[in-house]
Length: 197
Ligand SMILES: [Ca+2]
Ligand SMILES: [Ca+2]
Image 1 (spheres, rainbow, N blue to C red):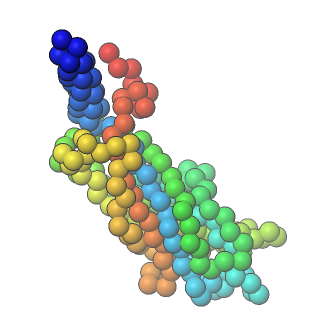
Image 2: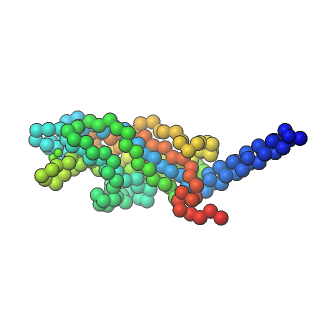
Image 3: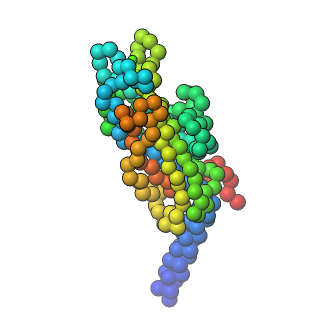
């Protein structure tokens, strides 16, 4: 009797868990995380080939914006002004940065199973100067496609990171690089500010 009861309880718990997971997934809301890992501007130059600073290495500030709205548009897409971007990294006297700089954005327009959602992360890197306006080092488009798979249903709140990918530099491609990983995992409608009935 007791074991029958605990079986029933377990059964109910499992069903509740599965249906909530299914509901969560079927709504198609996801949290997207982008992790910048590596910036390399070994020769210490800005967008026009001049040096960042006369005597020292660059002082890079990395700004980024996850563009879900106009991902197919050329740079900078939806991020029209510097204040649209989020400042992620600021370093002094470094041409190369190894980092773990993460940004997060919720995808609150549902992406359904096997649909493809294009994403473009816009990044702008500037050289901080204290007595003159900051110099533009380069601008980057970091593009990828997110396609929810049936496996997404079973992923925990962590998801799996992509392999390391390269952004496309707008001004000095092949001379400067910015790399990243990304992942996406299901979230609840309430995370998007929607009321669940
Ligand atoms: Ca400078
Ligand atoms: Ca500087």
